[in-house]
Amino acid sequence: MSKLAIKGGTPDFEAQYLSNSTPSLCWPVYTGEDENAILSVLRGRKMSGTDITKQFEKAYAEYVGAEHVLGYCSGTASLHAAMWACGVGAGDEVIAPSLTYWATCTAALSLGATLNFADIDPETLCLDPDDIEHRICDRTRAIIVVHYMGHPADMDAIMAIARKHNVKVIEDASHSHGSLYKGRMTGAIGDIAGQSMMTGKSFALGEAGVVITNNRNLYERCISYGHYERTGVANNFNSSERYITDPELVKFAGIPMGGRKDRMNQWCSALGMVQLKYFAERVRGIEEAMQYLADEMDKLPGLKVHRPAKESGLTKGAWYSPTCHYAPEELDGLPVSKFIEAMQAENMPIFSLGNFPLHQHTVFHEADLFNQGQPTALAFGQRDVRQGKGALPVSEITPSRTFRYSRFTKLDKPLIDRYVGCMKKVIDNRGELLK
Image (tube, rainbow, N blue to C red; front, side):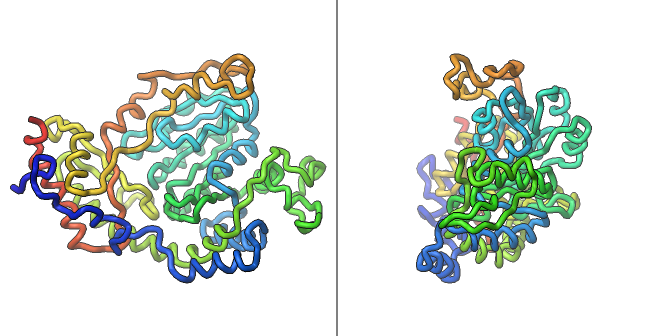
């Protein structure tokens, strides 16, 4: 058995060998076609227009199978708009998973609402349907669902609960570009979705995002909130094309109701047009490589890759931030932090989960966004649903029972086998790490 690098042995990989410069790990994939698309926007001085963005919206709507897509400057802005479109306002409650990135739900506070965090399923790491219904009250306006690390949530169960209580479902599909739920693309299943397309995401356009919906009224409300140039009021910079038909929204035309300018930069939408041409094919390459890697990792003790069963009708799309369940009890109690440390010493790009339980953060307990002298979570007559340590046990323990690893974009069996062999080396030498 070769000696661990953390104990003075030679690392299995040279520094930076497993990086974006390695062809089978390179992501995002950009070519001269992408560069030319961006340059054409620059040379045409069209960065702040909407003509290319509208083309991208149409193409992306066809890809995800939705009626409406609206381009945004960020995924955060798209989720903010989705909440407002669903009627989230002062004194309301929003149910969301705690183990996610803050942009999933923090905008609820800026709308005067509070967060009632729910726990996650220990296998899927998505919102647990069994922890939702008891949280619903007459002030609950929306349930936010995150398809965590690309794994689709249990949308059938969640939609049934939402319909029973007349509550809107907002999908945060920022992790799940290309992921399928029983044949349907994530983001096009709930009432509305927000989706990030920043550089670190699987469909990477820089700083960008979209709203996705099949509901015309929600689409129009999103336009009215932060897209003034589509409300039918012409000026020197915008056409008189009107996307708004609701008379309650038409009367506010010309000025965004949210006082926001949320539109997508056309460098991003031009890049999106090119990326979309190849995305489905690239996702197939990722799926082939990652399923092979997952099968090999699952043969090791203590590891179980976070993925749907192959016959479930669910897929992980582009496998955003691949994640593995880690069982220390199967590895003589070796903490995941020690495992990660040893892997990194071998120059393996393996990391902790990254997200932490939001329900424990002070911004959701104490932040006074409107200078009212009390936490915004309570300032508009909401119930006190603030939660502390121990409230959501699965969310709280998951960071100590998971790790993130590399995404292979092409099937490279020799490199993947070597990659898994390094994991096996650390696992086999765990006794040395426990001394």
